[in-house]
Amino acid sequence: MVRDERRSGPSWVARETITGRISLLSRFRKGLLAAGAVVVLGCFVAAAALLTGSGGGEGDGGGEAQAAGTDVPGRAIPTRVGPTELPGGEQFEEWAGPGCTTGTYREVGRFENGHAAWYTVREGGRSNPDCDGSFTAVPMSGSAAKDTHGTAIWSWELDDDYRTCALAVFVPRTDRASDAAGDPTFYRVLADPDDVRSGYTGFGVRQTVHRGELVSVRSYPVKGDKVFAVQLLDRGRDWGGAERIGAHHAAAQMKLTCGTA
Image (cartoon, rainbow, N blue to C red; front, side, top):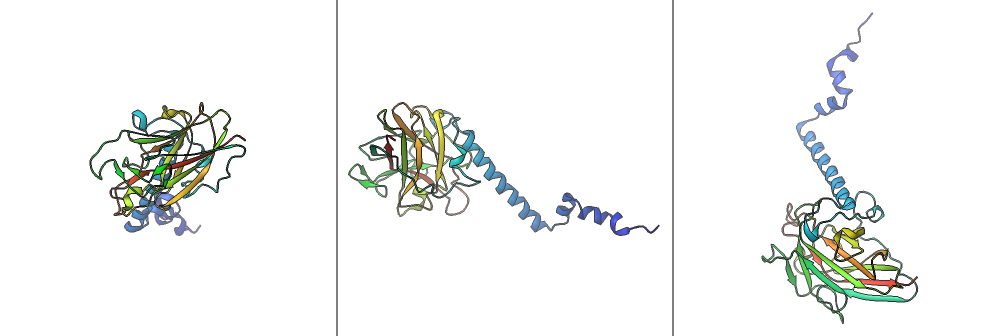
């Protein structure tokens, strides 16, 4: 019997196993493979953290609220969720945010330390009869999957008749790109503005793509007791490339349009 040296040799065994295939790669290609694995793992961790509400810090910035999977399709946050069909029936429309006389806006965990911390930007936000155009730059947690104590919450008081509300988020534009640099900025929709664990869905907006725009998110059912609320999460990376150094989330104006049908 003639021995098949090609199949019995150690080099054939190495080529026909996954481990063997990797072992035959050059050092450069092994590095590329490892980097790709890290990126894929990071995407899964970030998506899981938003959907389960895990990774949050203590206090009002954290919580275990879940986000609906339909609002975070696939493995990435869309740049825009829409177009949004406005609720039917009798309508209620109101703005809320920094510098607005309508709605309610509050910040939790704010501290001052120049551009390394929270700071107010006097213009670049949405300016209208109800809002003066100012907004707040919120420092990022430093991690794409974890939140800290910093958060901002928008809320609106509603009548019992309003059942569905369409939300639109304004992304400011200034001469300083790091003022609005969420890529993306994550939000939760809350049933109770005083309980961050009351979130029942969530969404993301790529502020780096939509500076100067009013982004239509989508319509949501009203689950609170005569109230609709939105929370900004501070998770995000503010280090790495030059465009990420000192990056902040912009907490600006939001418009809520609710209907009775």
